[in-house]
Amino acid sequence: MPGWHEATKELERQGKVRVAGIIEEQHPDRARLFMQWKRMGWPILVDSLNLIGVQAVPITLFIDEHGIIRRVNPPLKNAAAVTGEFLAERYEAPAAAAPAVAVDAANKLFLWGGEKKIGEAIDAYKARRQHASPDAAATFRLGVAYRRRYDSPQRQEGDFQAAIDHWQKALDLNPNQYIWRRRIQQYGPRLSKPYSFYDWVVTAREEIRARGEQPPPLVVEPGGAEFARPLKQFEAEGAAAEPDAAGRIHRDPGRFIRVETIAAPPSIAAGAATRFHAVFRPNQRIKAHWNNEAEGLVLWVNPPAGWSVNPRRVALENPREAVSLETRAIEFEALAPVEAAAGRITIPAYALYYVCEDVNGTCLFRRQDLRFTVSVQEKK
Amino acid sequence: MRTWGFTLVPLLWSAAVGAQTQLAPGQPFPALQLPAMEDGRPRSIVEFRGRKLILHIFASW
Image (cartoon, rainbow over all chains, first blue to last red; front, side):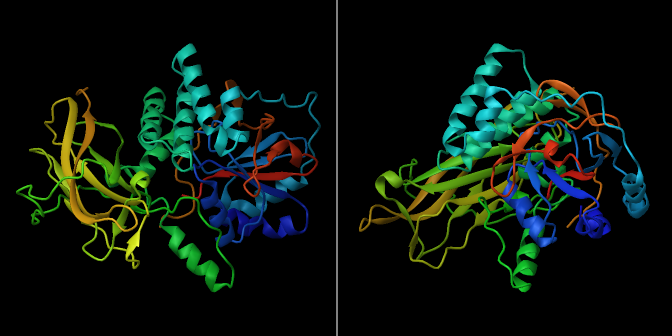
């Protein structure tokens, strides 16, 4: 887009052509940051649901004054010439206007219902799936709705995994849909990443601030898998000292810290990798909070025989405040052995943390045992 | 960071909300309302009729 913007911004400024965009990603606020960074001010429409159904991006269209598509992906290297030809051409008005596109109830709830209606949108997608044969697009959109709820105050435990699961089901029905594939890759392992998805965010903010501008806030701060760069070969982590090999630390069965685990993707072939996410939230019902005056949160993974993981030990740094309530996230990747048998595999792990109960309550060092699960597919 | 360019060959057949729509020369762009990035209000590419339009369909990743 920046190449096209450079090639056409003067024509746009002169009013000879209009420029607009449609974005195909889950989080439109990131596109807003990108647009400000690249100084592109044209209007953007948000198509998180992939309602226009494109299977890959980017696509550039020349659309005439009657709304008829005239060129698809004109060559950027000849941008001046092809744009000049397009602007010089006279196009006849079509006999009939483009028919309006019907949008079903679930999509309407998602598009126009706001955060408060996101649960209803999910229910509407689910009801539709119950009454119709598997619909790949509706399955993908149900995943988009789950992820939106996960990012909202209406979040329910399991929403993130449900999003990944439905994107995977949709992709199984239509493996040529690269927009859908990208949603999984966004959170998935480095072996299957085509590129880092949002590593530009840091540079964009720095450059925007250096210009004396303020970057827009992001609803969800990207990180982890979204910053990770592709890898061609899995790098298993070597030996590290296990922090509680004897299992002597007292357990937190989830009373102080609620942990959500996610596998992206949830199902892999033998010899392939997945990326696990663990999200830690202090239990607000007992006013639990992190104690930051001691060691930070640690995750230790014990892979089954033949499986490789990286990293095996993850340690987070504490924030500066003595106590805090924030959600913490840890990610690691696991590689299935080539000879792995089909079926559901559990990878045991545990987290160690300092946590306090209530405002003036006791602070404790606790271990929580975790189970990360992934399915290994039948060999084809 | 990857280059901002063409990462895939786009496939042009699209299933627009159940109806088959072809994003191909000679076809009208679907009259579909989507939220505007700035304020979330419904907007459609149809609004841009009357002037020639360059439309970029993309993602910031």
